[in-house]
Image (cartoon, rainbow, N blue to C red):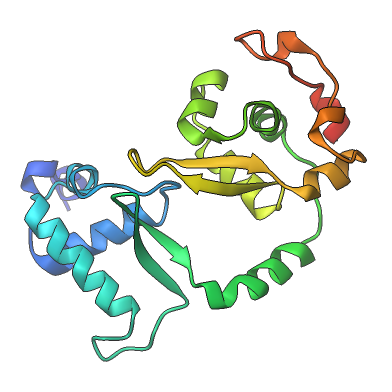
Length: 202
């Protein structure tokens, strides 16, 4: 087998067949934290917007069980002009029980720093947190969501960006009654806002 056989095709060379576009869309949708517009998805998978629109419609029908298969435990939902995978509401209790039953582990330094930014800047979007920390925070935000320390507060109707905030679980872990009791250590945030020592979350 030649080396060319392992070469990833360029976006312009990728297949525009509905099934191929749908598979690439699923790969992207599995890792995004915020709704993605059809234009953004088209750029990501290297396919025309009409082909992506058709593929999205096909995935929605497939997940709903309209194509002969079973109805999935998740759905592809349009929110704020963008598309994202969501667990169906009927499984919220199941997910909460599963996450709550996981053995607790220490948060990484990256998770502690991200949590500090969210606690003091909320409501705040993932991109705003990434801008403050100057690093990608996608996986860290997923970890904090899974641990129940942050939650999705609302989606911006214009940009589709999800705004995050902290939960009561964070207060319990910190042993405080409200965010007003957080210590004030302003140098920890680059814009001079109040911050707190991540060591209190260890």
